[in-house]
Length: 193
Image (spheres, rainbow, N blue to C red):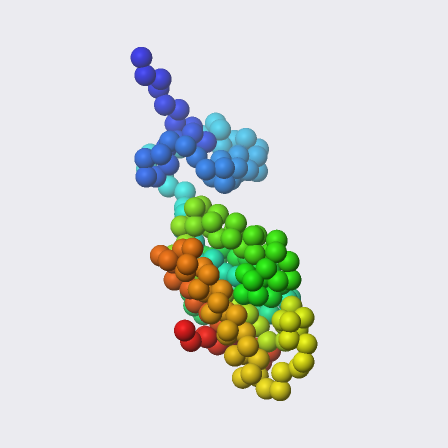
């Protein structure tokens, strides 16, 4: 004898045929019921009614940037111009691409690889975006002399960005990897292959 499936708001089948709810969906529904004072449990669901905004199941990219607070708004604005707002997983490590070399700490490289695997398995990302920036303190530790011009500093970062891209593609050849350099003047420029 088959059990009769429950059709309450918390147990109804998901789109795509799976009967299981994600943790995020279940918690969202429970929060909604709590905010409504539990009334949602008593109200029948309209036939064919859909959630107003279904959760995004696939991020469009994983972004690796530096922890430097001076560039956060600039990077968000850059991603918005690329139509990526709210559609990326984000990892911030001191030195950004430099972290993949294990500097300043080997744990940073391990953290990146762990986050990349999680982003791939949970959100099915097709792309990684690496963003280094001008006047980076982590880079100053390996290049203590000041740069004489912006182009020299950008090229120094470009070499590490390209090495990081090559490491990612060696492990995950199906991914696309984009390289960028954020400048203090507000520009975020692509680094050519």
